[in-house]
Image 1 (tube, each protein chain N blue to C red):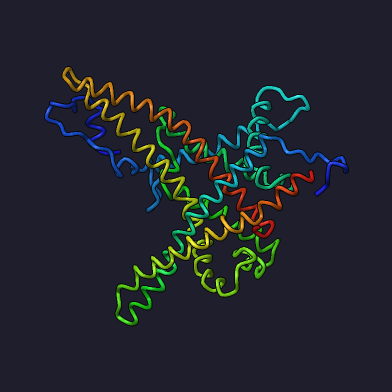
Image 2 (cartoon, rainbow over the protein chains, first blue to last red):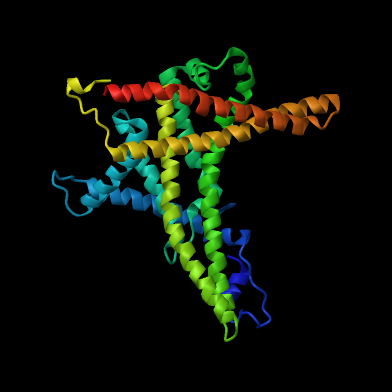
Length: 268
Length: 97
C-alpha cells in the first residue's frame, strides 16, 4: 500500500494540518510481496485467491461428504447454494440437459463471489478480481470449454458456420466474417473479463476514496460536516458493493452458462 | 416437445421464465456491445491498412464508422427483424400448449 495512506492511518494527516489529501490510486492495488522465490513474489491477492478456493472446496466438501436424504446443518446451506445456481443460472440457459455442468458453474460462481466479497471483510479488505491477472485465467477456462464443446457438438466447420445466424444473405456473410471473428475471439472474452475486473476495481477505489476522505476530513472544524457526509457515502458504497460482488459473480456465471448453451447447439 | 396431452410437465413456472428472460437479456446486451466494438475494430483495421497503402490516413476513421454502421445494421437485423419474425411462431406454439 502507498506510504501516504500509511501516514494517514498512523495519525496526524488531517485537513488544515498542512497535509495534502492522500488520494488513492493505482498504487493501492500494488502489494509488497510477503516473500519471494527468485523473481516470484507471493502477494496478498494471491493469498486471498488461495483462501477463496479453500473456502469453496472445504465448504462443499463438508456439506456433501456424507449427504443425508433429509439434509441437516451445513448440508442445508449447501443445498440452498447449489439449487440457487441451478435454478437461477443453469436451468434458464441450459435446461435439464445442462445439469452435468452444475459442479463447474457452482464452483465458478462461489469462487468469484468469495474473491469479490473479500473486499468487504475486515482484515482482507481487497477484492482479488480487481487485479485483472486473476480474471483472465477464468476467462480462458470458460472460453476453452466454450470452444471445445462447440467443436465437439457441431464440428469445426459447423461451429464456424453457425457463428453467423441463418437467413443472412450470402453477400452479407462476407461483410460480417471479420466482425464475427473479432467479436467471437477477441471482444466477447475481453468484455467478459473486463466487466468483472472494472466493476470490482472501481468499487474498491470508491470505497477507499470515501474511507480515506472521512479520516482526512475528521477534525474540529468545518471538515467535520464533510467527514460525516463522506462517512455516509462510504456506508452507501459499502452496501452497494455487497450487491455488486454478488451481481458480478452472477453475471459472469450466467454468461458462461449461455456460452455453453450456444456451444451445445447452433444459435437461433 | 411434448404437449399437454402427453402428460409431460410442460408448464414453465413464472420464476424460471423470468430467470430465462434475464439470462437472455444479459447475453444479448453484451453480445450487442461486442458487435459494436468488433465492427469498429475490424473495419477500422481494414481502413488503416488500406490507408497506409494508399497514403490516406483518413481511411481509418472512415473504416471505423463504416464498421459501426455494419454492426448497427446487423444488430437491427438480428435482434430486431429476425427476432420479430420469430415472435409469432413462439406465441403460436405457446397458444397450442
